[in-house]
Each structure stands twice: as structure tokens, then as C-alpha cells.
Length: 436
Image 1 (cartoon, one colour):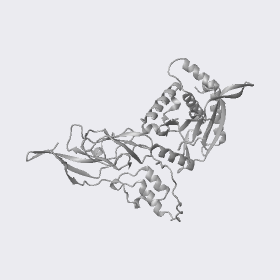
Image 2 (cartoon, one colour):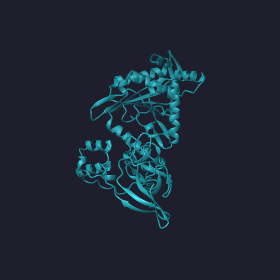
Image 3 (cartoon, helix red, strand yellow):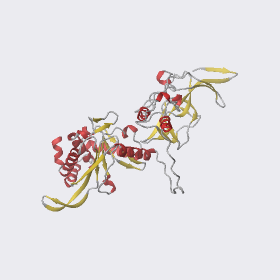
Image 4 (cartoon, one colour):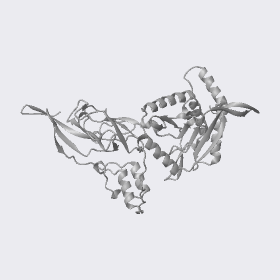
């Protein structure tokens, strides 16, 4: 690295690099700073976590792609930070070849090591470089502005929003780094072009009570449920089923030794078998293309209530797993949900959701579809009830099954057939053997 001696003072040339909040996952536009992991003046290495943030989907430790000395932090703990906003600046020793700072290749100049988080890449090209001299005493720096590269790529979310509201992105001036056009820029353009409505009279007295911000997981759930109700013409059907034989089958499985099988895993296996018979329901709707997309694999989401709110972990390729494998994966994801260690990739990409609200001690519900999926199966509590069994009145273990579906992907006959097959498997688990 370049070293110069001036009147006995050792000076180290460095380049100050700005690290911005990267895209943390599908559809996320920002995050809340929960806890800083470094202070100004700390020495960091490449890919060292520097800040803990909470997105709408998970808690994430964000690693920095540069190694050097932290010269500045942006944002207090609890502040909301949009994607692309600066987090920290790092003085990287110029010409470092010991691994603490990557050489300035095209990818490194574009934002770092390329290893920020599994599931997403680094940010666009940096707009500024600052040369600093590291010496005893206060940090002294001189600033040199490097030529700006091409404008950052506009996110698909912003492009879609602009397209939906007929906004010409070429006419907008972005407020983000390097002129990046943000969602807020498009929303301002939409608001400016909207007709001015007469203001509603303000209430005489402001409502009193505790105000709870809709952000983080709670805010994401609110947005997703509202979008589901707004876009999906859903319908619900339900049926009571005798689950006595299902519980007996589970008891036999668990008595045979090996990992314990949960009721939720049995229901998950029933769902994958039902979706194999009714593939219309493992689908999503492309509104712009006016097409139904039937999906080849079942990525089964299941609702899990945690201290941070409702989350829906996803079991990938559920149709390829055994009942025992489903039970182990559901248990692993449930524990990660409770400890807040689920990665964003484990909370996205679901194609069908299973919601066991029976754990709350209730019998029935009308589930709201987990957008952009096409259906959700709800399961109430299993409880002893009078039931006609083989012509006689008996006490049996009864469960209510409710099924909400997108009426665009199928009609009631398909939905009823799916639910009836699920109920048949609950009442007679041997029915599953026909599909194994």
C-alpha cells in the first residue's frame, strides 16, 4: 500500500468507500436499524456484520463488503432506511493485497465483495471516492469526486408501479443515490397528476389512544392481507371431518420409533396429495398478462405465530418429502421462526399455505389467501363431538376444515373436490396409499 513519510509522520493513503443498504429480498424496499455492531473508528474486515436490521420478513445481520476503518455511520437505531441509502463509509487502504480490502475490479467498484448476503447481490456503482490520509491524531481527508457511471438499475417494483399509473420514468428526477428513481418518486408523480379532491373536514377532536406504527412484520402482514382482499376474488367452503382414524394412525407411527410425526406434517402430506389431484390450485395469476400460471412444485407455507407477529415459513419441494421429512422440516422452520433467525428466502416463494388455527382453540375461520398464491387450507381444533359412525351415535374426534380459493383459477367444483379429498384422507388415512 502507498506509504509516505513527511517530517517523521507516517501517512497511509486510503480510499473511502460508501456502503449502502442492499436489496434484502423479494419486494423489500427498506429496513429498520435495530442495532449497530460497529462504532466510528473501528477496524472491520471484508464481510464482517456491521449492523442488525429488521425487514418486513426477518432480522438480518448486514455484512460490509469492504475492509478498513469505519469513518461514518448513517442512521440511528430505530430509524427506517430505504434500500440504496448509505449505512457506513469505510476508509480502505489503497492497494491493499492482504485480503482486508478487495482490489478495485469492476464488481468491487460496483459495490463490494458480491457476498453481502445469500440471496441477493451488492449495490450499484459507487458515486464518490474520497482519499484520506491515515495518521496519528484526527483523521484528515481530501475529497475527489470520481466520474459517475451509468444510472443505477431501477427496481422491477418501481417499474411496475410506474407502468400501472402510466408514469414516464424518463421524465422523473430520482431522489436516490446517483439519481436513482425510488418508489417515493413515482408516488409523488402519481399524486401530482391526480385531480385535487376537496379536503375532508378534520374531526373536531383527534382520536385518543395508543398509536402503534404499522411497520416491520406487522406492517408487512397488513399490506399483504389488504392486497389479497383487494385483488383476489376469493370464496370459502368448509366441511367437518372425523379425525379419529388420523390420530390413531399418528399414534401407531410414533409408537414404531424414530422421529415423532406431528399432526401438521400429516396434514401437509395430505395437502400435497390433494394438489397432485387438483393442480389448478397450486397456481398464481398474472394480472398484467391475464394468465393463470400453474406451478410444477409445491412450496408449502405454514402459518406460525411468534412474538414478532405472524410469519409463514416455506417448506421447499414439499411434494418430494415423506411424512417424517415434512415433520422434521416443519419443526426446524418453526424453531427458526420463534428465534427470529429465518432468512428472507425461507419466507418467500410459497405456492400454497396451510393454516392450523386450531392451536388457538377455535373451530373455524375464513382464511385470507397468502398473496400471490391461489388457495389456503385452514384447520380448526380437533375436539370430541357426537358423531354418527357406522350407523351409531358415538363420540369421535372432529375437526372443521375450511378452504379459501381464488375463484379466477377454478370454479366451486374443483375447490369442493379438493376439500372433499382432504376430508376423506383425514377420515380414512389409507386413502393416501393410492397416491404413494
